[in-house]
Image (cartoon, rainbow, N blue to C red; front, side):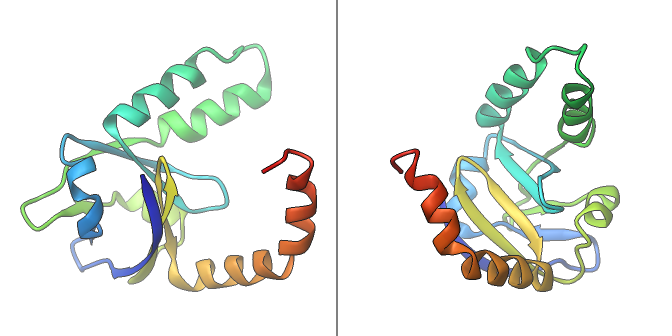
Length: 143
């Protein structure tokens, strides 16, 4: 399970150190792709395969399905941890998520999200201000 918030830097070669506590889960391979809200999503290989399977079963006759499939699947890249626990983030994904040097790696149960630090702080601040309304809406789901 991925949880927590971790601040890291992207080095000059585009490498990002994965938080130590998550490296074992990602050791067998991982996939990084475009995420929702202009961040990147990093999945363990097994979790990615489950998600990709579900996406592939969506009806392709629907424009939103095709768009979502393209966003997630065409944007995906296999990544492997190096000996120092780093992954290389492709330029097109760094551009998509507006990643600069300082990033936040956020654990979200079955995936990690990678955010530009300033974008994350803005997003988090806005979400925190709306937390009462969000909780009210989710209360209907008995969360």
